[in-house]
Image 1 (cartoon, rainbow, N blue to C red):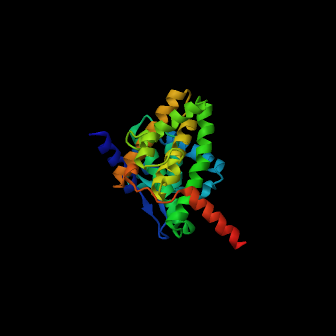
Image 2: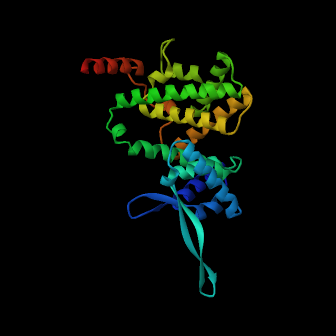
Image 3: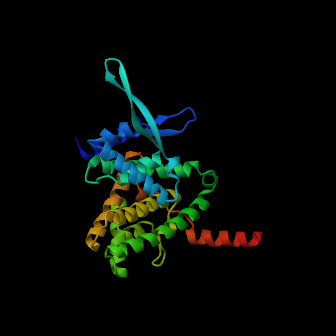
Length: 282
């Protein structure tokens, strides 16, 4: 079975284990996820769940909203039953659990991508305010998000050994090459037919910006979580994250980022226009 086939099998499995309660809320059961994520014993998997609870609290997300302790009856034979411990897990809880797993296991690595993307898509879909934005407004919002998360990425990369401006340019280029099928920043700049001082992020539509936002957030988190040390390892990590995002776009039948249209107006121009309008409303 190829890597792509394994990845698709894992994603189908994750989706097949999804439950929906009477109120329409989706959840997964820990006992069903345990063997899929290749944990041999409940005690080992429970420790991962406990780490996920701590991670949720540290993220200012009430753990009880995402991880609920429930009982489950199992047959012991001869008509007898016993209640065992189980947990109902939200999609975000599953994301935290796989983030605490061993990424060398293909099922864990694929689970990290699956639950991260699905969690982000659910957040945006549930955000009524975001859904009502025009394409230009989405671009302004997402450009701001990318800007802020790139600051975090810079800080995390610096701690990993990406020290000089040249180092960081190379580091960023690796992320682009992973996401854009081998195209670096200069290639993307030329493909968009931009002027020398025009930034490529300012000339992306909302879909392309969202892909780059996901690349940046996941690269920052993986470098930090894996305690990456050394600029060469950081570069490879950024490339791998970008490549995985690209693979997921392909799996979902999406358009590759380099094939998305370049907007006529830059995000900077839209931001200035928005500020003028807000100033006029005061």
